[in-house]
Image (cartoon, rainbow over all chains, first blue to last red; front, side, top):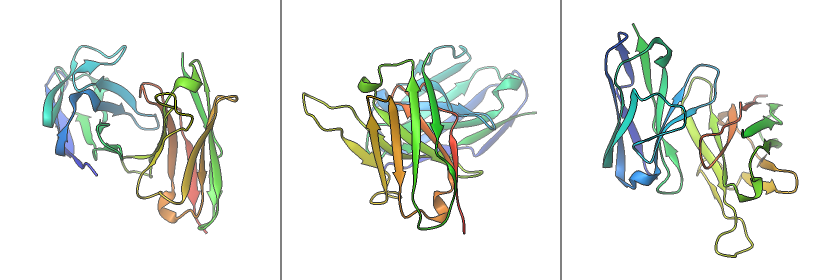
Length: 108
Length: 119
Protein backbone atom coordinates (compact mmCIF):
# COMPACT_ATOMS: atom_id res chain seq x y z
CA UNK A 1 0.00 0.00 0.00
CA UNK A 2 1.25 3.47 -0.91
CA UNK A 3 1.53 5.67 2.17
CA UNK A 4 1.05 9.40 1.64
CA UNK A 5 2.56 11.61 4.34
CA UNK A 6 1.29 15.17 4.47
CA UNK A 7 3.07 17.99 6.22
CA UNK A 8 2.68 20.07 8.18
CA UNK A 9 -0.30 18.73 10.09
CA UNK A 10 -1.48 22.27 10.75
CA UNK A 11 -0.62 25.53 9.06
CA UNK A 12 -1.63 28.84 10.61
CA UNK A 13 -1.17 31.87 8.36
CA UNK A 14 -2.59 35.34 7.83
CA UNK A 15 -4.73 36.40 4.88
CA UNK A 16 -2.59 37.20 1.85
CA UNK A 17 0.23 34.90 2.87
CA UNK A 18 1.45 31.98 0.82
CA UNK A 19 0.67 28.43 1.96
CA UNK A 20 2.81 25.48 0.93
CA UNK A 21 1.48 22.00 1.65
CA UNK A 22 3.55 18.87 1.11
CA UNK A 23 2.57 15.32 0.18
CA UNK A 24 5.27 12.67 0.16
CA UNK A 25 4.66 9.16 -1.20
CA UNK A 26 6.29 5.94 -0.06
CA UNK A 27 6.90 5.02 -3.70
CA UNK A 28 7.04 6.83 -7.01
CA UNK A 29 3.68 7.82 -8.47
CA UNK A 30 2.35 8.75 -11.87
CA UNK A 31 1.58 12.47 -11.93
CA UNK A 32 -1.56 11.60 -13.88
CA UNK A 33 -3.08 10.08 -10.77
CA UNK A 34 -2.21 12.51 -7.97
CA UNK A 35 -5.01 14.75 -6.72
CA UNK A 36 -5.64 17.35 -4.02
CA UNK A 37 -8.94 17.96 -2.22
CA UNK A 38 -10.30 20.62 0.09
CA UNK A 39 -12.75 19.72 2.83
CA UNK A 40 -14.62 22.15 5.03
CA UNK A 41 -16.51 21.09 8.18
CA UNK A 42 -19.73 19.29 7.44
CA UNK A 43 -19.04 19.12 3.70
CA UNK A 44 -17.91 16.48 1.25
CA UNK A 45 -14.40 16.77 -0.18
CA UNK A 46 -14.00 19.06 -3.18
CA UNK A 47 -11.55 18.31 -5.95
CA UNK A 48 -9.00 21.12 -6.31
CA UNK A 49 -6.18 19.71 -8.41
CA UNK A 50 -5.96 16.59 -10.57
CA UNK A 51 -3.04 15.08 -12.45
CA UNK A 52 -0.76 16.87 -9.99
CA UNK A 53 -1.04 20.28 -11.69
CA UNK A 54 -4.47 20.69 -13.30
CA UNK A 55 -6.99 22.87 -11.51
CA UNK A 56 -10.50 21.43 -11.44
CA UNK A 57 -13.38 23.38 -12.91
CA UNK A 58 -14.14 26.55 -10.99
CA UNK A 59 -11.07 26.43 -8.76
CA UNK A 60 -9.42 29.84 -8.31
CA UNK A 61 -6.03 30.45 -9.85
CA UNK A 62 -4.44 30.99 -6.43
CA UNK A 63 -4.44 27.20 -6.03
CA UNK A 64 -1.64 25.39 -7.86
CA UNK A 65 -0.07 21.97 -7.76
CA UNK A 66 3.40 20.76 -8.60
CA UNK A 67 5.73 17.83 -8.14
CA UNK A 68 6.57 14.41 -9.47
CA UNK A 69 7.85 11.03 -8.34
CA UNK A 70 7.40 10.95 -4.58
CA UNK A 71 7.14 14.65 -3.73
CA UNK A 72 4.11 16.79 -4.47
CA UNK A 73 3.10 20.27 -3.36
CA UNK A 74 -0.12 22.26 -3.16
CA UNK A 75 0.42 26.02 -3.06
CA UNK A 76 -2.14 28.64 -2.18
CA UNK A 77 -0.52 31.84 -3.41
CA UNK A 78 -2.50 34.36 -1.38
CA UNK A 79 -4.65 32.94 1.40
CA UNK A 80 -8.26 34.04 1.66
CA UNK A 81 -10.47 33.58 4.73
CA UNK A 82 -12.58 31.02 2.83
CA UNK A 83 -9.50 28.81 2.34
CA UNK A 84 -9.70 27.66 5.96
CA UNK A 85 -10.13 23.89 5.56
CA UNK A 86 -8.40 20.52 5.63
CA UNK A 87 -6.52 19.58 2.49
CA UNK A 88 -5.89 15.99 1.40
CA UNK A 89 -3.74 14.45 -1.29
CA UNK A 90 -4.78 11.20 -2.99
CA UNK A 91 -2.96 8.72 -5.21
CA UNK A 92 -4.67 6.61 -7.83
CA UNK A 93 -1.60 4.99 -9.39
CA UNK A 94 -1.84 1.84 -7.33
CA UNK A 95 -4.59 -0.19 -5.70
CA UNK A 96 -5.63 0.28 -2.98
CA UNK A 97 -6.21 3.97 -3.53
CA UNK A 98 -4.94 6.01 -0.61
CA UNK A 99 -5.28 9.47 0.91
CA UNK A 100 -2.82 11.42 2.97
CA UNK A 101 -3.62 12.25 6.56
CA UNK A 102 -4.48 15.85 5.73
CA UNK A 103 -3.17 19.34 6.47
CA UNK A 104 -5.39 21.74 8.36
CA UNK A 105 -5.04 25.33 7.18
CA UNK A 106 -6.06 27.95 9.70
CA UNK A 107 -6.43 31.63 8.88
CA UNK A 108 -5.22 33.93 11.65
CA UNK B 1 -24.94 18.52 -13.18
CA UNK B 2 -24.00 15.24 -11.55
CA UNK B 3 -25.96 14.46 -8.40
CA UNK B 4 -25.09 11.61 -6.03
CA UNK B 5 -27.34 10.84 -3.09
CA UNK B 6 -26.34 8.26 -0.50
CA UNK B 7 -28.82 6.52 1.77
CA UNK B 8 -29.11 3.49 4.02
CA UNK B 9 -26.97 4.59 6.94
CA UNK B 10 -28.01 4.24 10.55
CA UNK B 11 -27.27 2.57 13.85
CA UNK B 12 -26.23 -1.05 13.66
CA UNK B 13 -24.86 -3.52 16.18
CA UNK B 14 -21.41 -5.05 15.82
CA UNK B 15 -21.54 -8.14 13.64
CA UNK B 16 -24.61 -6.93 11.79
CA UNK B 17 -25.23 -6.10 8.13
CA UNK B 18 -26.28 -2.98 6.30
CA UNK B 19 -26.64 -1.99 2.66
CA UNK B 20 -25.80 1.51 1.53
CA UNK B 21 -27.11 2.97 -1.72
CA UNK B 22 -25.93 5.80 -3.92
CA UNK B 23 -28.45 7.10 -6.46
CA UNK B 24 -26.82 8.86 -9.39
CA UNK B 25 -28.20 11.32 -11.92
CA UNK B 26 -26.81 13.76 -14.46
CA UNK B 27 -24.30 11.30 -15.90
CA UNK B 28 -24.16 8.16 -18.01
CA UNK B 29 -24.00 5.92 -14.97
CA UNK B 30 -23.28 2.73 -16.90
CA UNK B 31 -20.02 4.26 -18.14
CA UNK B 32 -18.89 5.63 -14.77
CA UNK B 33 -16.35 3.98 -12.50
CA UNK B 34 -17.38 4.59 -8.89
CA UNK B 35 -15.93 4.46 -5.39
CA UNK B 36 -16.97 4.53 -1.76
CA UNK B 37 -14.88 6.65 0.59
CA UNK B 38 -15.45 6.92 4.33
CA UNK B 39 -14.52 9.28 7.10
CA UNK B 40 -14.57 8.30 10.75
CA UNK B 41 -15.60 11.05 13.20
CA UNK B 42 -12.84 13.63 13.43
CA UNK B 43 -10.55 11.60 11.17
CA UNK B 44 -9.27 11.73 7.60
CA UNK B 45 -10.53 10.21 4.39
CA UNK B 46 -10.25 6.48 3.76
CA UNK B 47 -10.95 4.92 0.38
CA UNK B 48 -13.12 1.81 0.87
CA UNK B 49 -14.00 0.22 -2.44
CA UNK B 50 -14.29 0.78 -6.18
CA UNK B 51 -16.14 -0.77 -9.09
CA UNK B 52 -15.03 -0.29 -12.65
CA UNK B 53 -17.07 -0.58 -15.79
CA UNK B 54 -16.18 -3.51 -18.07
CA UNK B 55 -12.93 -3.10 -19.95
CA UNK B 56 -11.89 -4.37 -23.36
CA UNK B 57 -15.19 -6.06 -24.14
CA UNK B 58 -15.20 -8.12 -20.95
CA UNK B 59 -18.53 -8.63 -19.24
CA UNK B 60 -17.42 -8.41 -15.63
CA UNK B 61 -17.11 -5.40 -13.38
CA UNK B 62 -13.71 -5.26 -11.70
CA UNK B 63 -13.96 -4.53 -7.99
CA UNK B 64 -11.34 -3.39 -5.48
CA UNK B 65 -11.33 -3.16 -1.69
CA UNK B 66 -9.29 -1.67 1.12
CA UNK B 67 -7.69 -4.35 3.26
CA UNK B 68 -9.74 -3.12 6.22
CA UNK B 69 -13.00 -4.22 4.57
CA UNK B 70 -11.93 -7.03 2.24
CA UNK B 71 -14.03 -10.14 2.80
CA UNK B 72 -16.70 -8.20 4.71
CA UNK B 73 -17.97 -5.53 2.29
CA UNK B 74 -19.26 -6.05 -1.25
CA UNK B 75 -19.60 -3.29 -3.84
CA UNK B 76 -22.11 -3.66 -6.65
CA UNK B 77 -24.16 -1.60 -9.05
CA UNK B 78 -27.47 -1.71 -10.88
CA UNK B 79 -27.10 0.27 -14.08
CA UNK B 80 -30.83 -0.03 -14.79
CA UNK B 81 -31.48 1.93 -11.58
CA UNK B 82 -28.42 4.22 -11.80
CA UNK B 83 -27.52 3.04 -8.32
CA UNK B 84 -24.32 2.00 -6.57
CA UNK B 85 -24.40 -0.23 -3.50
CA UNK B 86 -22.17 -1.18 -0.61
CA UNK B 87 -23.18 -4.28 1.30
CA UNK B 88 -21.57 -4.12 4.72
CA UNK B 89 -21.36 -7.42 6.61
CA UNK B 90 -19.79 -8.35 9.94
CA UNK B 91 -19.51 -4.67 10.82
CA UNK B 92 -17.12 -3.52 13.53
CA UNK B 93 -16.91 -0.47 15.75
CA UNK B 94 -14.19 0.93 13.49
CA UNK B 95 -16.60 0.96 10.53
CA UNK B 96 -18.38 3.90 12.16
CA UNK B 97 -18.05 6.73 9.63
CA UNK B 98 -19.70 8.93 7.07
CA UNK B 99 -19.75 6.99 3.80
CA UNK B 100 -19.46 8.98 0.58
CA UNK B 101 -19.86 7.78 -2.98
CA UNK B 102 -17.86 9.46 -5.72
CA UNK B 103 -17.38 9.16 -9.44
CA UNK B 104 -13.91 8.42 -10.73
CA UNK B 105 -13.76 11.86 -12.26
CA UNK B 106 -13.55 12.61 -8.50
CA UNK B 107 -15.26 15.96 -9.01
CA UNK B 108 -18.64 14.67 -7.90
CA UNK B 109 -19.32 13.42 -4.39
CA UNK B 110 -22.50 12.80 -2.47
CA UNK B 111 -23.20 14.41 0.89
CA UNK B 112 -22.61 11.11 2.64
CA UNK B 113 -24.59 8.78 4.89
CA UNK B 114 -23.65 8.15 8.50
CA UNK B 115 -23.13 4.62 9.76
CA UNK B 116 -22.79 4.11 13.52
CA UNK B 117 -21.74 0.70 14.78
CA UNK B 118 -22.55 0.35 18.44
CA UNK B 119 -24.16 -2.05 20.85
